[in-house]
Length: 326
Image (cartoon, rainbow, N blue to C red; front, top):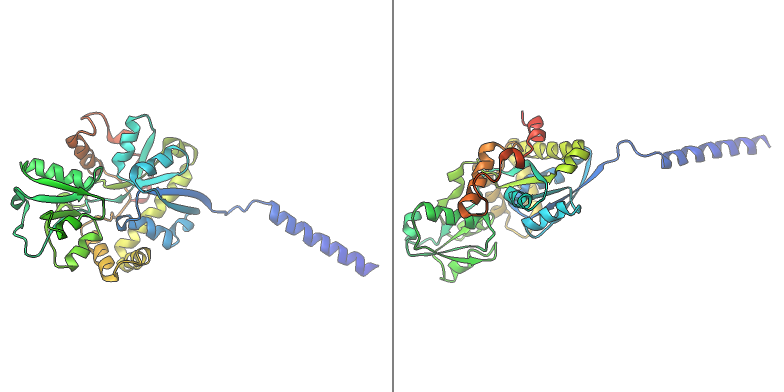
């Protein structure tokens, strides 16, 4: 009887402990967050490094990444409550705000202009001046690369240049088919073209030297009010990723190769190296006024936004990035 009683007591005690463990919430459980990216893009490598290297986990987050298929779709997901963050051109969030949304940009992911113009190896085109009376292949608008090209042609007074607009990622096709003399490309298409003998005839990255808010992470103002620590944790993880990429490029190469397995390893690594060397990947997630203004000026130039309609303070909350950028 004594053995049975003692056995029952131990069994009951173990059962109660187990039940308590199940019932008690885990104090260190990761907080969930969802981010919609416009595209799966090598330009967005800081996000992938943060995910692949466990940096979100380090800051107590479990992050789900969804590919939206475009910047507008990503922003719409945040507005509709399907995502906590989206990653794309910050001006997409700005334009949504002009229509009544309440979004703010909180972290820089692409801090320069990852756009280059290339031409075939035997092309007589060596500079922008040589584009007179030529046709250039470019992405269908809305695309920042095409807006930058249009603005450049306007500044240079080259009104006689024609554009052949095609789906993003296929800009080289009209050149290979003889329907365009040059093409404006993102990475990794640039390195693919160079590997096939093409040459760079204009470098938008050098024009801005890493001071251009090309792609940022935005969220709702209400999310900042309700979940400030979650936002801080997210931005802190991005900061860690950007620092890691600068101090240990091999990590950047490894993650990029893993994220883009269908591409030649040499092409991926060359793309990442160029993006690092030309300050396209930022050293910190801080969004400077100068970088934001560069993107805003382009939108004003092409007529999407009126001068004075948008301010840095209304579109950017840099407080989270500043805490981890010192």
